[in-house]
Amino acid sequence: MNRLGFIFSSLLFALALASSMLFVVDQRQFGVVYALGQIKDVILEPGLNFKLPPPFQNVSYIDKRLLTLNSTDNEPMLTLEKQRVVIDWYVRWRISEPTEYIRNVGTNEAAGASQLNRVVRNSFQEQVNKRTVKDLLSSKREALMADVKREVLAQVRGAKPWGVDVVDVRITRVDYVDAITESVYRRMEAERKRVANELRSTGAAEGEKIRADADRQREVTVANAYREAQKIKGEGDAEATRVYAESFGRDPQFAKFYRSLDAYRSSFNKKGDVVVIDPSSSEFFNAMRGNTAPAASKK
Image (cartoon, rainbow, N blue to C red; front, side, top):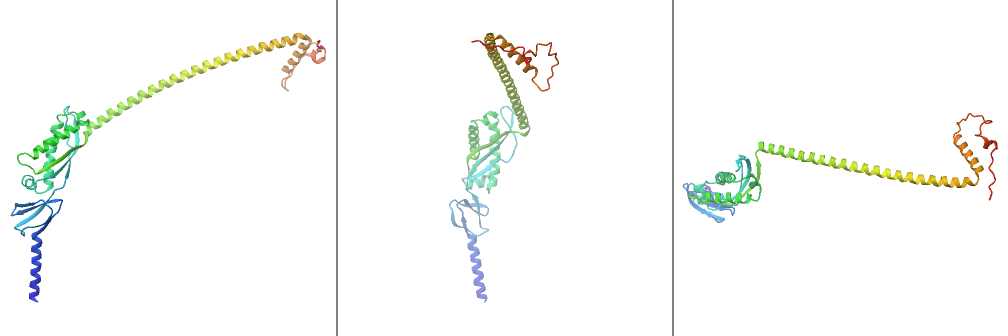
């Protein structure tokens, strides 16, 4: 029984020892083997590898993928015309030489990101100081980003290389600081209100002009129509008078009788009309009394 226990314990020890000596490097990582705190070997290719058991050798991993560093502060920068602006940016970078990176930067990605953030920030400040706000918002922004990238690469590839490669530097936002932004918005609002009021005033003036012109044309049209109507009415009255005169001239007795009937019709137009007159002494009712009869028309 003791023999079996010893064999079992030996197997467990051998497995533990083998597991401490074997390690796998992923395709997304570098494997760094340390011997008593010093870099012994750097594994660049993925696969199964061997090392001495701890504490003689240890292994750590560093990401070899393309990393993104975003700006983390909102500290304003001064432009050429002394305007305070806030710039948001990001950097795409990767660790290319693990040995140099560990010796000159740190043992993890956070150390490189921290130092790279400082370098990029200083480079942006230097380049922004040389440019106006208009340059930051125009196509010259591309030149700014190219200059920052060049300066950052010169810094990380200097006397003590960082072992990193900066792939791209980009600006995502350029804005004034909050106090200036509020002032700019107020000026823009005032300008838009001024333009709106000017447009409304111009529109009101044009509207009054159109209404006045329409009223003038209406008055002219009504006057012309009234003139034409009066002209036509006058011509009709003249024609009617001529016809009446021609007709009544043929038989004056009938004309007198017809006019008497027309006078009766006008006088007794309504049921309540009352005329107080002496029929014996008035000639108004001669036609009704038969004193005036229409003569026979002679042909």
